[in-house]
Image (cartoon, rainbow, N blue to C red; front, side, top):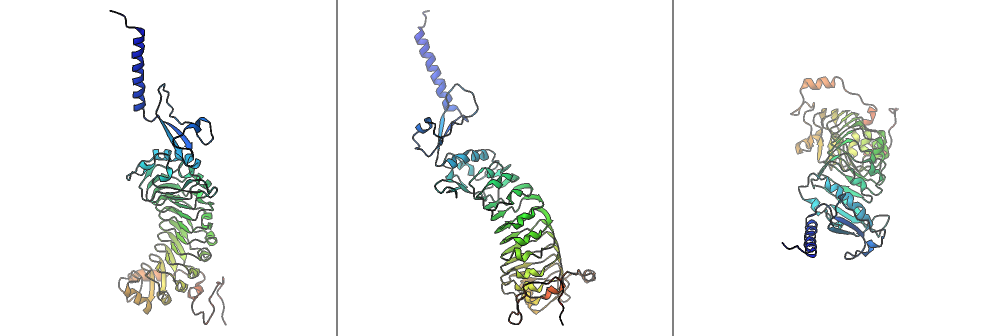
Length: 433
């Protein structure tokens, strides 16, 4: 047999090696080199060769190989976008549920077109572009935690993630987000102690933590912040309502379906003088209704049902000229239903069922006929669907006496043509000649 020339062997070996390299490039996965380029032409790569600071070094997987890999060049509109890109991709990697295919759009360098992400000019640099807002409402995304995502978006101002399946706790690092003014993570699976990091976020005006599993007490300082919306209902929070409630100006306050206890603070008027809606329903509040509730001039909804409040209804509630819904059902209230409360013109629903009221006048009976007033399961002798006489007698034999009982018939707003409105209440019962 004749010998094969060395040149032929080298030629065949070269072809074999070339074929293997091409095959490796085509089939390699998860080992792409990503060149991050900021603000340069998409068809130009020479900036990276100059070592410019805006061009990051290649990021490659930790894999040893003698074979070349396919390169992917990502060009970002702004340096701030390149900073949050790995944050988003890391969060994407832990998404456990995505029924709408949202994260399929989280590809490439055009972050501002990712579904749920919105860009704007940050306050500190109007010529820059950054991720300023996130709206995941209703996406039904699932993840074991938001930590490492929300707290790593330095320019975020609005974060809405209502109705998803996010678990874990809220990172303490959100306290470092200078622009965050709206935070909505309601209807998720978040748990643990109340996220104290939101306390002291002076930019925060909207906080919605409803329908989660937060437990324990709420820092009293939270109620001293100037929120427009403070919505923390349907958790497992428990404590007395703090007196510091008197030093804030909340428009919408919902504490419902928790385990708050104690009385409604007398200073609530100073706190909620601009209140539109307050929900205290389904807690463990006790004590008497303060006369000062009648000075909530802007209130449209006041719901304190299903607590353990007692005493009579203050006549001052008749001063709530804008109120449409009043709910005190499921308490231990007694006495007469003030006729002037039933005369409120905007009243759509007045729920006083499951108490121990004994008297309703003609105006209130008109509301009963219209379906506006629900007075079932009380102690009114001539009305149907009332408590048994024995049950009423047992309760009324030991009525709960409220402090400052003389205030319950005072009116801070009516008959001002005869007498000036009452603007303050003395500590002790006044004496008249």
